[in-house]
Image (cartoon, rainbow, N blue to C red):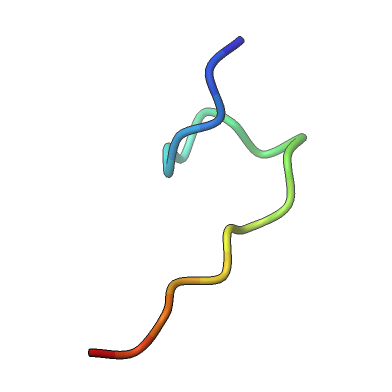
Length: 20
């Protein structure tokens, strides 16, 4: 199970993306 930003991976919490 790779932790990726996917709509299918609803079980995993949203990853916090660092601002540019």
